[in-house]
Image (cartoon, rainbow, N blue to C red; front, side, top):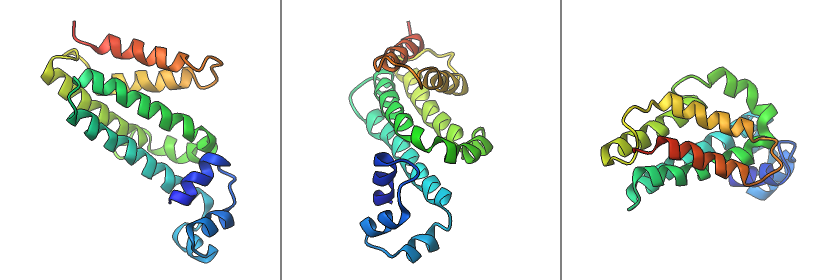
Length: 170
């Protein structure tokens, strides 16, 4: 998976499957047995990366920062994930759209992480008590969509600051 992830980041979704197999130290037949279609491999890499983003929440919430501060750190991690996956967008789009709203789909997975931050922030008093995980997830998705073609590389970070500031308890 690491060889595929690196190839897709470096080259994009058109990376050579033969090259991926060679880098991974396996034969092309082994690669195709595990991932019959290129889309299957891309989806598996994406799912693994998404799980890493979700697990980053655990480390951030276990730290000394407030949940609001931890959430702001996590939004940077999630933004990096979104940015590196843009090259896979066309291949991923059908599967992501089909399962986007499902609890086990991409949006559902992100929403469950956001919910954990909101619960922790409401418990420690750093986030407003009236927040809804679906609303916050929708706001994040909106920021990512609005900045996907931005020419100012700092705009995304400024907008994430703005969103998290609006979530903080007063």
